[in-house]
Amino acid sequence: MDDMTGRRYGRRLTAIALAAAGVLYGVANAFYWVMFPDDVSETAGNVTVAAGNLGAWQVETVLFALTHLLLLPAMAGLTATLHRRKPLVATIGGGITLLGLYFSTVHLWHYNAFYGALAGAGVDADAARPVVNALESDPFVMASFAVWLLGWMIGLLVLAFGAWRAGLVPLWVPLILTGGQVLDFVTVGVPLKIVVSVLMVAGLSGLALGVARRRPADSPGGTEAPVVAHA
Image 1 (tube, rainbow, N blue to C red):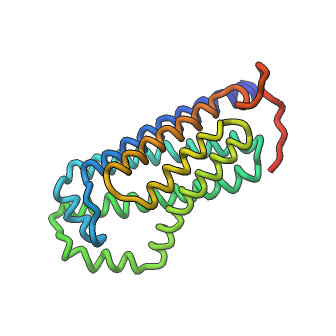
Image 2: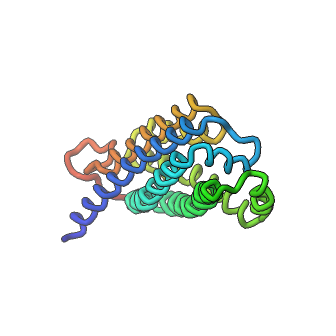
Image 3: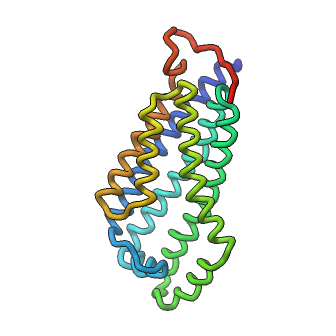
């Protein structure tokens, strides 16, 4: 397999991972908010929420876990694809994104699996509250939470706008992802979260289409445009 063939297969696999991760992300996010629409007043209240429909809680945990399994190689592949055209942007955006996704996986098990396990064991919110308060006051836990939120939000947008600047995708792709990330960060409630799901599916699908292309989006010819590495 020559280098060009390897790149072609790498782009295809990255595109598939991006598209599949986008769909799973949208499904998992929508499923969670439809099944658990009420925002809790305190974190320990998630034990009560999970106990109210433990089966649905476990399903959304699996959905988010599968989403992360696809997002990690998808973002790594996007970083590698972008690195040939925008190496500095790819290095910064890819590093921040992958770090955020790593800590997002940690948070997934701390949040979803932790409260699901407590609910399944019959532990109520009052009994869980001291443990939850201890976790939320721990600087390492809070630091990982911040790295997850900022890393995933900022890193993805750096990569998306870098892909646009590199000619891989049209401008609507990073703009839609920006809308989805910001809306997810500042809003609660089922209708708006459904909009977040739609925007994220569209944005990640747009990235997938851009990566799968045989040439940059702004190249008029039938062959791949020459690669010029610049930041």
